Image (cartoon, helix red, strand yellow):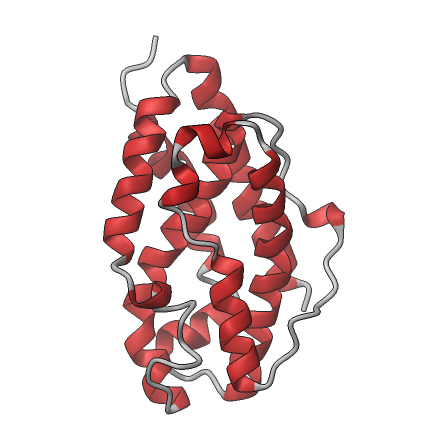
Length: 193
């Protein structure tokens, strides 16, 4: 029998995988405020290539519109494209399906979205250092600044949906597996640059 809710279980189980993502050279440079413009554009391109196909797949899972998530979750790929277009980077970076996290049900989609939505909270902490290093303010930083919206607010709203919709043990396990797979797939994708 479960003793912890899905939110606690996801945070606890995925923490080591989350920590590994932060060891990537681009992530470390953003956090340290030592990233240069070429590396930042590479990071945005890699993130777009990873996130956009995932967002497309999530939108095809039947729960997307009836859950109400479509009205509260902002497409990260749109923010990435805006940044790349402003900075003159490419929005067409090759992505292979071998990096696609595995999910085929609403609970799995929630696990993937946990990683994507949660990343915006971490990005908000890194933004001031990256902005200073890059000489950017606002434009070119929309992805890291969550489009000017409070990342805690949108993540909190997402967590409310997650906790309300992913209650059964089997659903929680599918969400956790999908979140772990997303972290591992992202790590491999970013490390293979």
